[in-house]
Image (cartoon, rainbow, N blue to C red):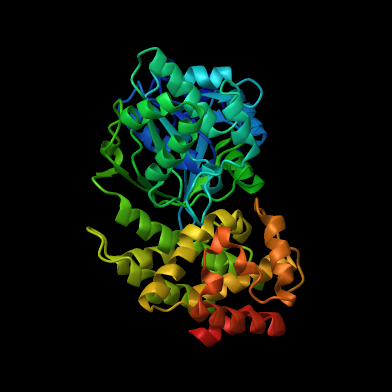
Length: 494
């Protein structure tokens, strides 16, 4: 075992004999990108792309400053600060090979939870030209049924009364953009990197709704000056576990308190609409297109929905990881049948994409035995994910007379999952969802009202009023509660 070296800037030259390290001068980097919501995915995706561009000797004006707006971001902030914002990316291949490389594209990190001023100042700085986001689906603060901004959020109410004391992304964006406007600085681009269809359009709609109430004149300026390109992002990035930290120390002698693991596959498709310039990401494989919509829909309805299908059904059955689900022939066949018969028919043709090849690649990616993506991670915040990933597919298939049975079983399974909170072996489920209480209460009511769960209109819209859907849903729910064998039900349907 190699002598362990604590990861920081002073040790990079020594570490360079063990694994690839940044070749560029990080101290000479200007911050051009402020990223809100730094997590594993951002560090395996956007920050990775920028690191690769920096390795080519370019983009020295595009360093990243991470921003944390939640108390839970404090741990990562502290770790990155102790490591001079360096971290290791571990790319895990299906054959067991792991390629590790130290990333240097993040050069600063600021927390906005106790004192918002450093964050506002950084966003308002003349060098900042892009503010990007990975704040999860739930961070956009919209009603999933109506698509309208949620003004009932207490944090939003606070920000409307106290514009200089922001809490949410909207409060910080408006405070920084107001400062830029008043200083006659050009607007920055707001770039969403979250799994929401038309994520840029949604971000624009939500920010303008907020700004129009807080400061109507500013809202007009934002509408005219700020670009919100839609983007499609893709790279499976499981939660880092202690075994990853230990493996890095044993293989390379690198003491990294929070490395990131990911699959080899990576994709980023962006509409080329920027307010104030952008990095030359196309040099490292990013695809710029006039309209990202078809690519977004494909990814959300196939990959993300596919994950949720495996996650919820697998959680109830007792499979711990996504690859374990794919190793089960019934689960693998069920997923492929869903993708082929319910998801694909509503996608249409997508230029440059062979959907059969894409679906084949998804099964290969999900099966990667070295990723071991937990079903609990996939199921987390399902209330924010399923309306866009899966429930929208049911609505569209109902409209055209398409098949709905495979997706409907997942909804029935979600009710069971929310009600019982244990799998079919009696083992407790790790449920992480902002709506957990409401979901549990509604699911509990199923004993008295079979439609109670799907009558949560904020999630399901009018599904509970659709006779075709409710007939299929109630039959599945009854069978699931009486027999309690999700795998047997899946097998009977394929």
